[in-house]
Image 1 (cartoon, rainbow, N blue to C red):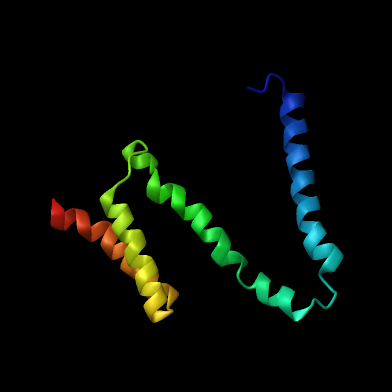
Image 2: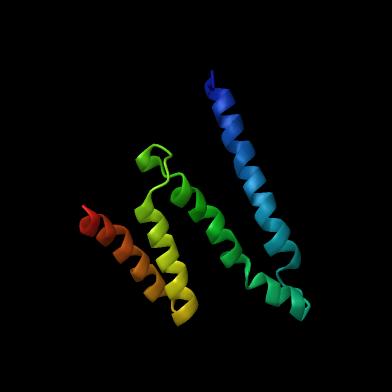
Length: 109
């Protein structure tokens, strides 16, 4: 718990400075330079590496069920991955996951 107003503003300023320096290290220092093709190829996969890290906790230990694994969420994740791999269409994968997430509980009851 933050006790005083100065401590709160110090934390906010520190987090802002840290965020700026982290982004500046990539955009400001190497933003105008030509990167090797292998680095450019690897950077294209960064979002696909981040998304599972964001989705996995919500799928395996959702807060809505008190941290218990839910069959509907697991089925939705599997449907999303399967449709995404087969069709290579992001919107189709999202739609399949949403339909499974909201449709499966209606079918099961």
